[in-house]
Every structure is written in C-alpha cells, then in structure tokens.
Length: 259
Image 1 (spheres, rainbow, N blue to C red):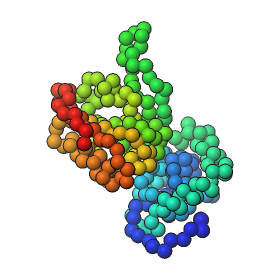
Image 2: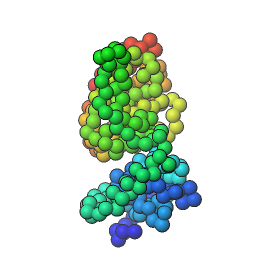
Image 3: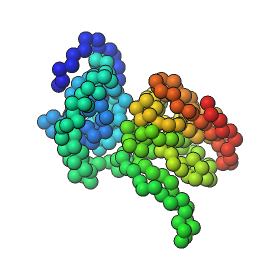
Image 4: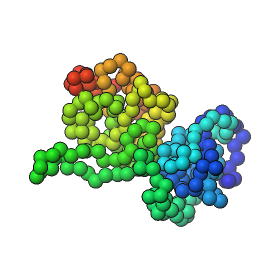
C-alpha cells in the first residue's frame, strides 16, 4: 500500500477481486494501465483505491472471471497520483516480470476470446487466387472485451460498428475497416451500456484516438449506438471528429455525415 492518503471518499465504481477464484496469473496486472493491481501472496490485489479508475480494462483478460466492477465507498481516482506512481515504477523490473509470467502461462490460463493480439498488415487481395483477405488487424473486437489501452487504439482512427453492419454492407472490410481499429456492439441486445460509454470516453481521453466513425443500421433501435458514442464523447475532455454512417437493410449507404 502506498503512503498516499485521501480524506474525501465517495461512492463510485471500483474493481473487486474474488480471491477464491483468482489464480494469480497476472493478466489483470498487465491490462491495468494505471498500475492499480499487484500480485501479492499469489493473488491479485488493488494496491490503492486512488489508482483504480473503475473502467474495468483489467476484467476481460481474467480467465477465471475473478474480477468485477462494484460500487462502494472509496477514495476518488487521482490521475496525478497515478502518473507519479508510474514514474517511480519506470526503473523497476516488477511489471516486466509479470508480463513474462503471463506470456509463459498464456497457453494454460489465457482466454482466446479476450487475449489482446495485433495482426500483420493484411493484403487486400491475394494476387494468385484473387481471394479478398480480411483487413482485421486486432483481437478482440467486441465492446465488452476490448481494452481501450491496447496499442492498436493509441492515436488511431477508430470504427465502432453495429453487429449487423458487417453482414449487410458487402464491402465492409474495404470501405470501413481498412486502416481502422474496430469495436462492435449491438445497442439493442447488449447489456452494460454504461460500460460502453466509459470505454468510448477512455478511447478519446486515454488512447487519444484521432477520429471516431460509427456505422449503424437504418432500423430505429440501431441509433442507440450513435447515442452511446455521443455520450462518451460528451463526457470526454478531448474533442475528436465523429462521423456516422447509416446502412439500410439492403446494404446501401443512405446517410454519411460528420457531426
């Protein structure tokens, strides 16, 4: 526990760890950009509440589902304290050691659905066969699983697409995904909309993305995804250009506009 003391506690979102489920694999430590987590006596622990922003970037990599976001009384998140703490950690090898442990154990406890991966730049078309290749450059892509701190979001042009867009628009990879980092979601069926808003805010403020494109279907329920993106942008301190594209059920673009 650090020596930082804060007098003003508030009810806010923060990470809780079930120590009975935690195996100490270290995935969450690597995924936490603020350095709020540490492996102590074989279990992950929040070392200081002021370091935890409550966004949950550490959750998706846990193979045991030992982490969750709860609301409780805690000291407010302190970005300045985080920066000072991370500065003191630069010359320490602890984090690199954790990363090596995760790498060594990934085949045993890593979850393929949420493990962060960056792919090589794809060729759009195979010259020999004429086969069109995927332009996907990352994994994962589902909004609940993405980590806004992942390297492929840093300073990137980001596409947030409704699930159905990729099936409806024939040239989705070429026209929308090329040179973009991506996240997909269904505004009607997905749970945890507040988490989506916070992740979009984190993409803008934390990853400092360059632009945001929102691709939705013409059906009324799909407009909710644009609303989530706008709310996330509203809460962010930075401003980024936002474009939205509307696809009809026949797969044609019916609207394309910068906000």
